[in-house]
Length: 183
Image (cartoon, rainbow, N blue to C red):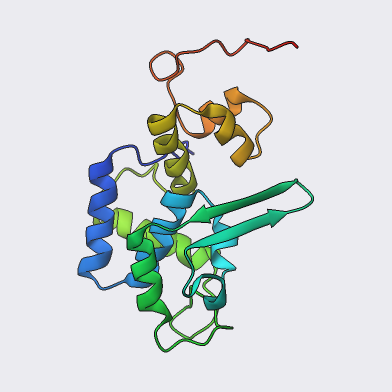
């Protein structure tokens, strides 16, 4: 089995977005955009209800066990899609619903995304798990902040974070993995 990789090419991201738009599949487009723009776990995204996002600018993530309390803001495209999806929906309904109105299951989301990748003839190494990695890869490209990503992904080492977001240690990273700060 091959390693799941992030979507590094922004043209591929645009291709996927355009595919969803051309098919008027706003539910899966919102799921895709939330995943690659926020880096939130897929299980968390699938657990969202309409009331969690309706008429909101952001979402707050609180995990007392892991001492996590962060607010993640939505961009304009995501806010617009949320508005579109929330029309005629009750607050207690799942944000991502199946055709029968039930909460979308991870396996269904996985199959749907793999079908899109196949229809677009994308790499077989791209999967639903790629979406969170895509956030990490592009966040790193913009900020070079591996410490934030290590904390965000709750990983024990920078090396694991580098592997997770599929960075080439020789080309992409300009630092020493053995560096330790002592105060």
